[in-house]
Image (cartoon, rainbow, N blue to C red):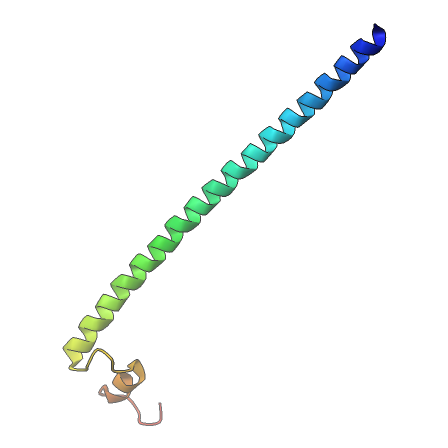
Length: 86
């Protein structure tokens, strides 16, 4: 009978270890999901700022009288006060 009790204790210990590993894995997954969600928010913010800058650049090119596909280097060379060897 004592052998059966020892086996039961061993099974309980193994079950407790498995449950702890499971909880640790769940915690790791939740942490990874939170990190991924924050990264997505950061990326969305970056793309939003990029979109705003593209709109500002488009407006600036229009104000300067350049086509939308004019390279910035060409615009910079055409601005007053720029040296020709820049």
